[in-house]
Length: 336
Image (tube, rainbow, N blue to C red; front, top):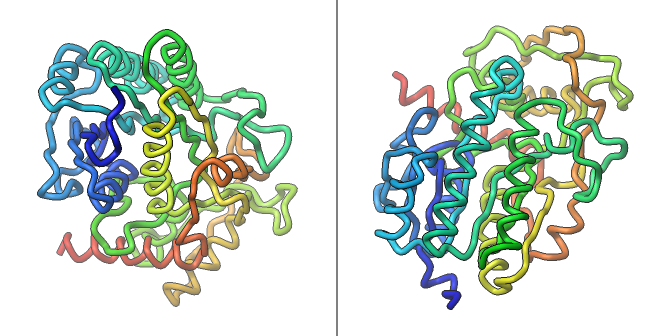
């Protein structure tokens, strides 16, 4: 018997990480009982609210995770745990197939054998590779060009097969470029050496870096720099709550949806926004293109807007930058 959303206990894997911690806040803000599993390899204990249980452990430990699911009567799982650095996936592919694919397989098995009915998966636009057309739709060919994208796509295939064989439904959310931080300043992107452009740029604005590299100025875009679809992490977290509600209300339906705003900003536009918000002039270092970077990558988000009552609250680029900068200042304050 499927429970209602307000009676569910939700397990969040990787809930001490960047996106996972925002999802935990969104669930908590909606009054949904939540438990976090995180091995704290890249996550932070402080990122999980004090009133949300944090169990330290590895989602790849099938027997242990199964016991946690049963002990806490888990009804749904939001799965964020994994590795996310694309260049590292190229140099160390086995790490990604272990952390992102093998461990996901173990978690899915634990869910099935323990009777979990709903599963939300943190996927990525990297499953598309370099798309033939943008904005890219969910039905576009999946042609990952790196092990990171492939490791996520393999998990999507596992979920699809498992949902046909067992009483579990799932939603795979394919993220575009996630940025920003909790507007209330409770959590944000805190990973040292992060490679996300907005994170790098606000670090530079505060003097933590002496420049920002601009990789390529000859793309087929209005200003020659690459264009990406930046989505505020809190809007993304809210999409997870709405997706969970949809799975609970339609227990035989499975969903795969892009998470983006449907419009892109170039590297130059992002850096101009950081200059504007921070009232500084970031030093820009122009370098050659990186292999595999498409000219533009934006989401066709008509499916998520049609299926969920999802209305982004932080779609403005300056707002995303403002929240990212405020969080960076908070990290700086904590380090003093």
